[in-house]
Image (cartoon, rainbow, N blue to C red; front, side, top):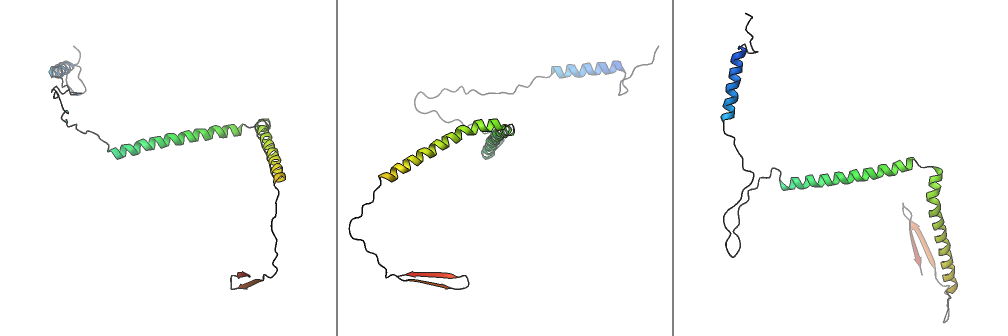
Length: 163
């Protein structure tokens, strides 16, 4: 007859099996607790008028101001991420720019600018040709005015008097 096989706690294997079976049967015999997940009010509302208010318990864990700040932070983070992705795409495009690509983009813009300058010059010359100054009445020139300029002080304060 061989030696008895013992478990880690020193209990013979047959006793350990019987104890495990007893613990499992004891656990299975206990009733299962059910927690309600919803509530339905079965009271009939009045036939006319307003329904009386029912108190709604507030079970929020986070205050409303903190939730608002969290939502704003998430929105700002998403916006900054979008701006960063856009900047990355633009910089990737600039990094892969070639002379031919730059010329293909800037030549139409330069052509439009040149056409706009030419049109502006034609319009300004046309407007200058139409204007005609007509003087009516006598013209007097006064040569009696005297200019008096005085400079004084550490910071060279200048005072001009025109008479």
